[in-house]
Amino acid sequence: MSKPIDAIIIGTGVIGTATAFEMAKAGYKTLSLDRNTQIGHGSTAGSCAIIRMHYSTFDGTAFAWEGYHYWRDWADYLGLPVGEELAQFKECGCLVMKTAGNDYLVKHMENSAALDCPFEEWGPDQITDRLPVYELQSYTPPKRQDQPGFGEPNGDHIRGGVYWPRAGYVTDPALSSQNLAAAARLHGADFRMGVEVVEILQENGRVQGVKLADGGEIHAPIVINVAGPGSAIINEMAGVTDEMTIKTRPLRQEVVHVPSPEGFNFEENGTIVSDSDIALYCRPEQGNNILVGSEDPECDPHHWTENDTDYDRDFTDQWTTQALRYGQRVPSLGIPSKMRGVVDLYDASTDWIPIYDKTSVAGYYMACGTSGNQYKNAPIAAKMMAALVTYCEAGNDHDSDPLTFTLPYTGKDINVGFYSRKRPINEESSFSVLG
Ligand SMILES: NCCCC(=O)O
Image (cartoon, rainbow, N blue to C red):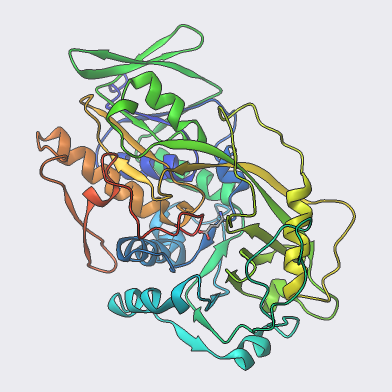
């Protein structure tokens, strides 16, 4: 007879599969469910998979710096048999432009220094030595292509930046989820794909399992919502949204892929760049391309969607705005007539900081509101979720007596209440995908 299921995990994106892995290692018999037919093929597949450390809060920075170590040691972390195809971490570094908007990164450098996370301050010459195709004229405030003054420099210049050498990106985010699922299976985890959860079963204030669209029921004393952009709908099914001061919502986003300019190999020699002067981030992309995303300035409209299935999957003039705005920084950029890149959803929370928490329904937990910037934290968020479940199932009240969790690599203690569903909006947040 097969072992009864201890925990149902809804979602097989990178955080869902990492949660399955960490829960299975902690001794829980897990069953992961996903509406998609392939692991990692929801919003994780569209993720930019950027591993970087410049978050606006100390806790965010500590979490991301801890998270880096799992990608660096990916094969060891997973413990899969030799020969398994693994996602690759490319450690290309991350340069962040100093601007008035980010307070010239004073707080970010303080946070990194307190965590012994290496960084270097670069002047304009170091920036253009590394990125010879860059021009450092300032264009702030960022604009859309149809706004007056678009493309006209304001007379100022970028005066420097901060470079985090340990940053990078993962080449195949869907594969990284599949790696985590394979590692979880080695510890007894099961996965059922192509099934839709339509009800969170409850009795006497405790979760009992889930009901599926085909009418079937699966029973378990623990259910964890890691449904990415579908998280809000699952939380509504569980009836826990009224107790949340922080909500989650799917947000549509477009990511541009453009070829590296002639004569410069961005894939080999480029770096991640976060440039709030033009409100864009970029990173090297395979095929000597550059991937360009928006940092959500006021001028770029936010397209919130009603649900995570019904949204426009075609590029719009947002693609052109992002490509042209990046062309301000890289004047030799060739912008192809055929739009290429990714249209996908973030699971954005009210303050763009995720929720890793219990709820008032005993046994029902959530790891959601991961907004498009938590990919890097999947392994450590999952480890923390497993610790949180164990803490709460042992009878502790995490709401009144929050769990303190020690980050294993860096040895820092964090108050898991920082990620509470009931927290006040964190005004330190950048209120953008930067977190
Ligand atoms: N998903 C876009 C940005 C991700 C990040 O820089 O963390």
